[in-house]
Length: 431
Image 1 (cartoon, rainbow, N blue to C red):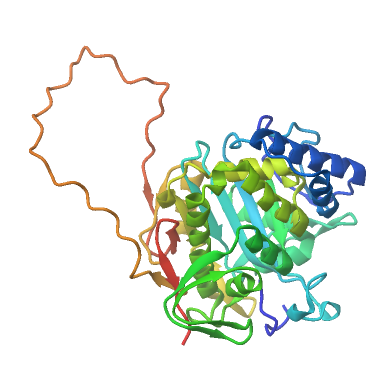
Image 2: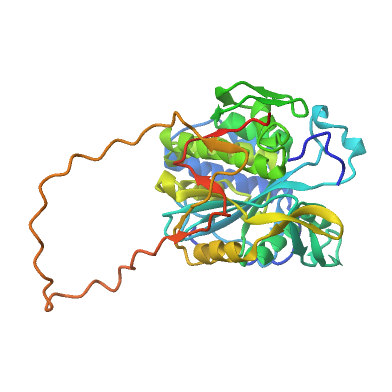
């Protein structure tokens, strides 16, 4: 999400193809009943009683949803347990000032709506790994023809910055663009503005982040000394927005700075057992329902909670944050970054086949490895070597064909930057 001084510029499967979208004009009573049914399911499973007022409070705050094409209406909601199968979910951070606090700028002077944060989360089919890919806002990509809210379509664009997709055709257009770029179908999507980030960070109780060098950014009023800081509310939002305060002052530095925050958030959620507690997840889902624009497929409490619970057993080392591989370049006389097709193909081929990935590059220009990171316990001292195993018996029964073999790990090239949730990193101030 941009800074104010920037110049203007389950049990039944939901369809996994999103081709066009429009704002869904839901009947308010139907919307309320849908949310209430999800909330009651959470309460039934968790065994926790809450007042009728709390349920009404969720329903009254739910935002209009966006319909992604080929979604199947009326599908059965998933149970409050880990969702079945894999997940592709797109999260978009909008720089729109509409409906936001005046501290972010005058909404009456707004001239564009840009998705300055675009992240795709992929959870593998067997829930053994999760990958979050951040797309640089200034990366030139082809934009497909996107539907207009009032009917008709916007013309396709051969090469535009990816953060312009939100203004062309809203959240559905961003989904279409990322699908075309990655070859992955995306059935779930969400858009969040500044106030939504504030409320979501409050819902998780703040996040501890490490700062290696002081961050001094007057544009976002982010002033942090070296050390560990617990960020919540406005402080968390401004930390995620800061660009000039970290790395080399670029959006790429901001991405790696955001990954410091996100990896710490995952460690915190797992250590507090939030991902196994429907009651805690319910409170986060409530904040999301009231502060985000969700795709129709995502706009119920059951689905949000079940997706979050799919992360509960994934090891930290298999939660990977990746920056879409790119290099400096120009298009149409504009400067920005260009996609690197070969490493990107290697990345998305691995994800499509649910192969685990390993990073060999660094964490990016906005972060460094934490020198004070916890040290893993040393393995026990080696014992005397065990007797040599006998040669295999040729008459022994073959391996069970019903048990799939362990997929090979795909090592990504060094020009793919990022980190895992198991990597303790610190934000690198821009001095």
